[in-house]
Image 1 (cartoon, rainbow, N blue to C red):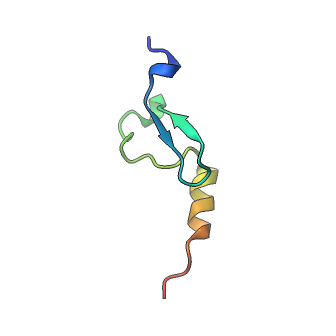
Image 2: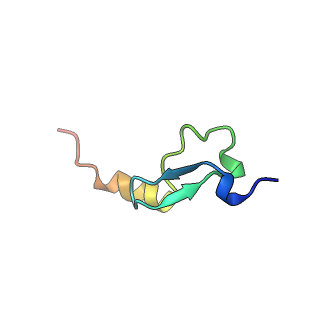
Length: 51
């Protein structure tokens, strides 16, 4: 078993908080960008409309 402090970490671009690897992200850790669905939605709303 690994300690939580030994797991990989990333920083969420929406809120700026660090988050750690989760078992459910095991297959797609490289594609994970946001710490939560809330941050994903928040970042999508901040995009300006395409011209």
